[in-house]
Image 1: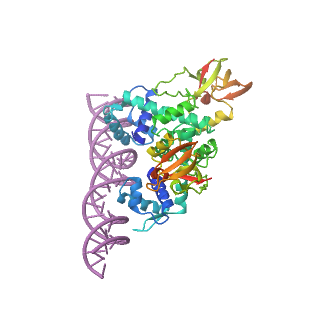
Image 2: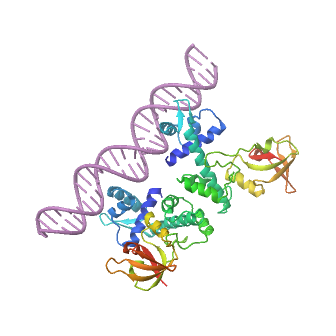
Image 3: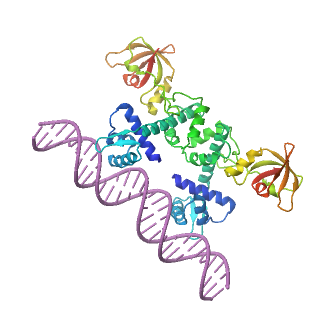
Length: 217
Length: 217
DNA sequence: AATAATTTTTAGTTTTGTCTAAATTTATTT
DNA sequence: AAATAAATTTAGACAAAACTAAAAATTATT
């Protein structure tokens, strides 16, 4: 698989998680930052390699082979992210672009050794699950903070939007994976929340709460 | 710089160390495993980017800019090799091809953090010097074991040929960087050596001795 | 010094992945 | 159901990096 093919497979995989139907050309083009015509070309090639099923005008779905390939790329991406954060002291907003490059390094042995070196982590720094060498991963029942009821205690599990500005916002307010939060007020007007964290009350907007995955504890 | 441009710059650098004159097209083609015509094309592009000086039919030399770029690639290559051997338990004959890929990851910050994480190593697993972030490296006065006189005690510093088969030979005979060796006989007929290492006598051929860098201690 | 051999360059193709613009199919609206 | 809008595909072109084959320049040999 070429660098470019890997990127397409990965994008199709991520889109599949959100909508399990055939993934349409424009959605892929949007994610890859290319044009629909380029996507059509590439999708044909991937179909010939039996990585995707493709019917003209009907979008694509990953084959078993394509799904496994995608998971292995995601595995590499997330393990490298753990390495960068845990061993090289990068912050969680810095690692995505670097991992985009590192995920294309071709060596199963390397990635399995890295996995072992990191102690077989189950999640990356953003709280997303890391597939094991067979593609299996742990699925945590998580919900968005904005959907949790009043007076519930929750633990922070991950982020939905992992843009640097959002991650930096979280860092500034000392919200990280594992943080325990209690919802003590919901403002009906704008759905902003007052939360209690480490004994301190913080006001957060509905937009923030809608990007933070938590589980009730 | 593209992946391919980086490979050319690196090869020109390595050839420059052996012959400090203009590097000829065929020599580059041999190292890159491409054809002379391809080299001419690429060399023109590198000259436009002012990474090399190039006169038709006269070969190329690196500019200051090109030299620095080359050293940064070598720096990355060798630091990744140290990482693979020290942290991920690869053997020294396995790491070259992986490092060939990793050396193209584009991030100064990453490589400087890796350098720090590894404790600012001065040499890679084959005994070759690692340039620092400014391109400076330590030059050790080393000679080939085949050139050392009788009854001298030497320390193993590195290898000339780092092909897997040679490195595996060394592993099998437990010769590694830092090994102390005494030359106790030289056979005039075939120039084979009898050496003393860890109290044991081993017979090694002239070819092996001609690939092993040592310093007299 | 002329010829032969070698090296290097040029010219023209190929492959991969992209693009624009036009054509076609599917979806939506009136 | 016809017309319009949107999405998708096709056709043709381009840039990067490689190739083959032929031409040109350099080096070696007689």
